[in-house]
Length: 360
Image 1 (cartoon, rainbow, N blue to C red):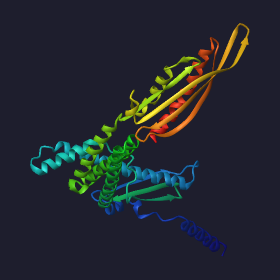
Image 2 (cartoon, helix red, strand yellow):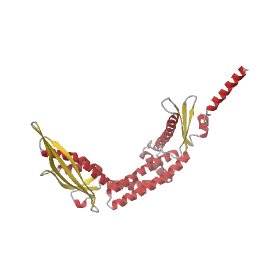
Image 3 (cartoon, rainbow, N blue to C red):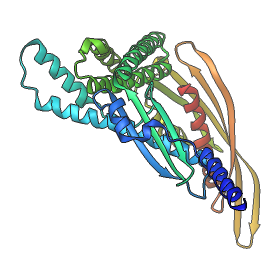
Image 4 (cartoon, rainbow, N blue to C red):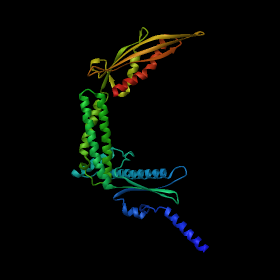
């Protein structure tokens, strides 16, 4: 009787343990994956990892899912690269179809697919934890026809955004808002870069795609328009910098030259004609001695420099900003040198304010 009870207990324990182990999903089988997700119709990736003692099961599963997603993206990028090579090797085509093939090749060569195309629409991923072996698995897949369909919609959406941004830039330029126009056209070109990426993926995933299916003519024309506008706006913002900076009773024009150098990296040109400037920067600087310390044979001079800044929008003559900047400087040679040292402390913060106003 004891033997029977013991055997019964063992059987019950085995059944409980078996019940605790979740059955593996069907996609764990390579045969199942090959049958249900063939390469001709799907981009997929099967990834295995381990759950160690330094991370939770969920963290390990998330890491494995991320790796599976990344491998699907990598496989699509590989498809793009091989498609590019195929088109380059088959350019000797004639007629209308040949011209279309050449355009496809140009598009495929024109941009490099970035790993940033990780927001693949309709990408599915599942994961599983084997509690016996502590291994973690993930399977990611996407149907190529679904990917193409979703990307075509994104192409139209991004193209619309790019056109709106280009029209905004053109309107701002007409109003004399060159800084804002440069920002708008930069957004347009960024959207067009996304369009090119998506077009390239569609062409590689579905080589039967026609250029009109991915709005190639429209995107190419808009790219030329936006690029020409960006070139027109390059260094188009003109700035006048004037005023009077003094170190006590001595004029100090070097300060104005230094300010010009500090703000030149925003892509502006300088003019000596205040009337033709998009932005007028007026500076008035003064110094005053506020302390002198005698230490042995050395004398330390302390000077406060203050610069009043006024920024005027050229096309409206409206004052956009008024403010003052002050810093202390010291030197052991004389008070003038202390004044130069004080102005040197003002350069960067004043230039930063000018750049902030013009850029915004």
